[in-house]
Length: 474
Image 1: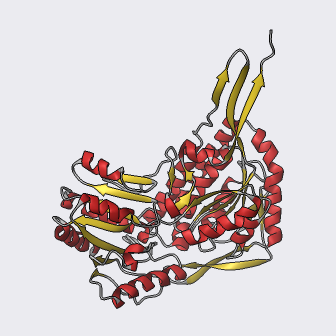
Image 2 (image 1 turned 60 degrees about the vertical axis):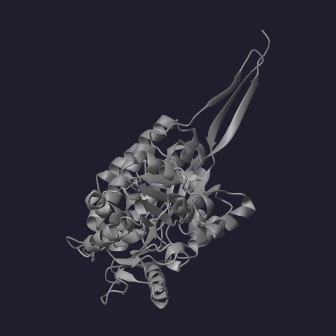
Image 3 (image 1 turned 120 degrees about the vertical axis):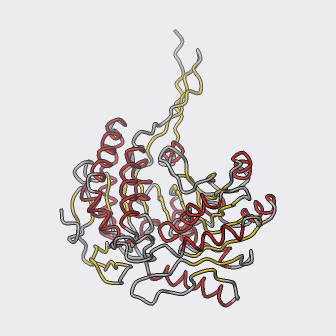
């Protein structure tokens, strides 16, 4: 297989082209690296029809057989790590080591999700009747994946949706379609035709999907603003929706933390993938007793980190993925400059081709500043001083978001007590960003609706059905 060209959609088990195409840009140099098919409404109709036709047979396939095929998909991805990671770096920008981690994670996520079990609950088993509740597939799922982790976040949807007996039409971001298209080509021969279809397109394709009556569910990962539009668009046909949206995750660093041991870990909690992670630390609250020490340690380490082209050896942070996000982050930085906030490092765009912004940290900006209240989704981190645990919990929770958060300290019981007071879907103690196909992940408040991962995430792709059988008297 040629991983460098010849990109086609996957519809009904076959490669599919489109009448139009769009360019995909390498964010490290702003050069066009390839073109991808730009699906028309008719192409989308064809993909949905293929998924609809495949649904009865797939739903009737024993779940252990579905499990086996999903596991095989994971194996195929893991057998092509090197080629997929290099392509992912070209279109997404992340360094090779991070791209490799994502491809490995994608393969193992499928294999992990394949082990989940659909529960059956017996409600009554009496002389009069037998009643049980089971979970049946919804039908055709429209899955919309983002550009920050295009492969693994697609697997969050593919694994449980297919295991539950649904068929799918998957749309990757127009900024990062290529690796997903090659993945589709790799797994095309494993699944029956039409079970998994992959379509690519520009800004119109997502709204076409969310409004299309042929979908029974939309699973979307992206911004909160777009999530609202998805929910609105799905309302006329009462499509089921799962929305994994934005976050403004707070890290709370307690006074007993070992600064020397934790500084690098705290740095990467914010700056992995150039901060383009929904569960990255976006606000770091540091106790006043250690504020200066940790601030200085974070800045000292940040100055050693190499920012550059992800394909170059030694690069630790790549470019931002796309121009709109690059300009948005620069706008937040400019607002902080205009307000006179103190920059510890960074603060200016790199004067080179590509969407590069140096690692940027701010020293104790006001709580009501945009840089604290908004999700940056880039390499910018405000460090904020606190003195009281109750106060910092209130500040961490004073946001419309509630996706993730973390608490750091040697006294694990105290850290856990604080973690349980954070109004977020996931809270970590002394680590962050650890997710598992066996554990539910989702947001509170405006960070989302529904969950992915675990049995709870699997059930998001099912309807609940209760069967009641009246027993005939002997």
